[in-house]
Length: 481
Image 1 (tube, rainbow, N blue to C red):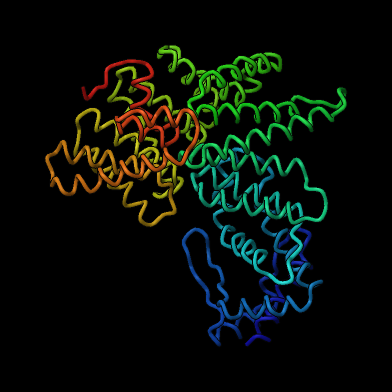
Image 2: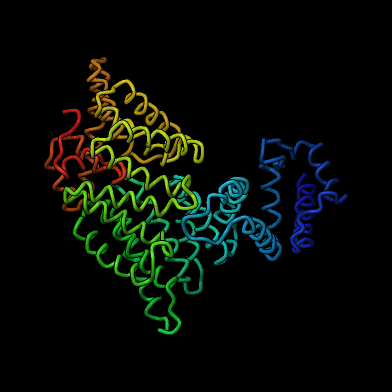
């Protein structure tokens, strides 16, 4: 059986080598079909039909292990096979840092199982496979940009951390650009995580900014371009995003003041929409904490308009729209805010799947809004959906804790079983207390002085899901009284 498996692999490898001109595999090749037939007859290979993805072949684990064992005895052949696999996968993945174009996702879904298999093999092969810079870059593109854009935060972190390990394992000096790209993705992932990852994200982004600054300073003045400067500029804006999560308003405001001057020096909003949109989004946060809700609404609405030009239904645009809907709610346009969040929830489920962090953020916002509007049965449905998702997805405890706390308050308002209410509430409060105790910043110490757990649970989750604390920041009346 092992010999048949190896013959299958050798045939595939020759097909890759013989078709580098871009024509793909020759599936009419007699040798290829003959080996497939043999493996199918002895139940080592099976054909799977799966909708739009088309048919594909699955080799059983034993045969796979035989192939790897055979390759481990011939390191030159193994390295060549690794490079062939890398080239096939890389052909489907664009070299764009963030965000990936929306049409990249359907292609990546098809090759993701092969990508994850390759990553696993690199991890446990002995002797180690020399995973080159190209592989590390591909990890960032697939694991960072694409998975992260679709709210697959846990998987994105795992893949980017593996890329970081590969750079550290490299005997040569690590590539600074790729190292900064990895830190960018890891930093972005912490914006979707809870309190436990927040300080790590800030440190990653500070390190990334230092790398970008060194690279910029090393460039001769006549070789510097706006695109080079944007790398450093975005790294600084990323720092502001971490400060926003940490409620460090003054630091965010200082970066905003500098960043808008850079944008205006480069040119118009039409020429640089992404950068202007990032500025306006952060500046809206500053306005909110000054109690300037109308200015905050204008800025975030303008940011959404810039980012949605040409792609109003993109995932990137949905993040700006989510913040816009939250400010609508704060201003009193509550029914419209819930409708907008409902549209985004449907869109995110369709694009990302039920257990995406983006979907869970939408559910949390909608659930809290319904609760504040005293629409308890609607609120309960969303909180229960969140807790159900958490049972089968690797998820962040802080989101779960806030959903559990609000579910307890909802059940209490509905006069449900007191024992069930206590179970949810006691567990949520204990988890919140422990999370704040473990996080040693001055702001966490300040939060620990409050006994309002709705406020405390807000700080556990990202800024995009903090409605109660924004009510307090802008000193307007809580709609639930």
